[in-house]
Image 1 (cartoon, rainbow, N blue to C red):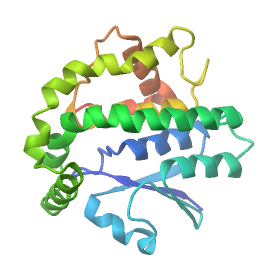
Image 2: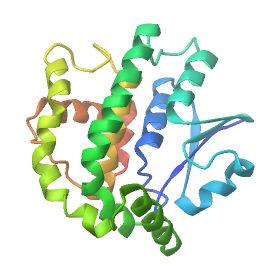
Image 3: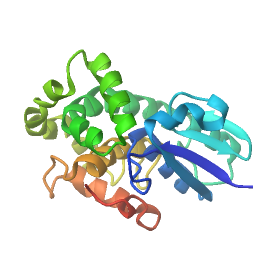
Image 4: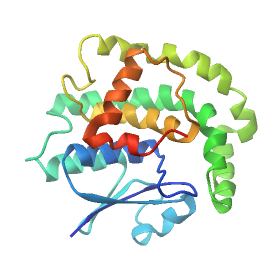
Length: 229
């Protein structure tokens, strides 16, 4: 039997871009599990696994379905305890929850204006209409208006990484000497921007960029297999 990961793409299925799906890709690779990734556009998600979830990632582990990247990580940890740990105990789970909050409220919020139009432009036509309607409802403004903040967010972005920079003074990964799920959470956010919008608004010699490079190289360069936009 095969583990299947349903993830998100635009026109090109070879370029999955969801930050949450990238967390799960890295978690599965961390566990050393063989899996097949099946990216689909936004409007095909409702048909997956008989309507199991409105969002991806969706994991089908030989018939057992799990959605939500954090729930999938917890499932993998419990189901495959003999494989490398994603958390190394309850402290690692608590760390990951904190990092998830920081990533979604700070990093994703800052990156959204930067990636908005790039995501829109790589979608199939049917998905463009869905993406515009759903994101404009969420943002309360047209995509083009939200994207006018892109230059300001690029300029301000490096300062928002200072907590990460501080941590990397003491260790190569947020999980310590080797990565944990907390690393994959931040990786997912930056990979989202890299795959959709191209170069990140981070200097090449920034410790966070150096950490990101280490993450891209993990698992035989799994992250690098999808090139920057």
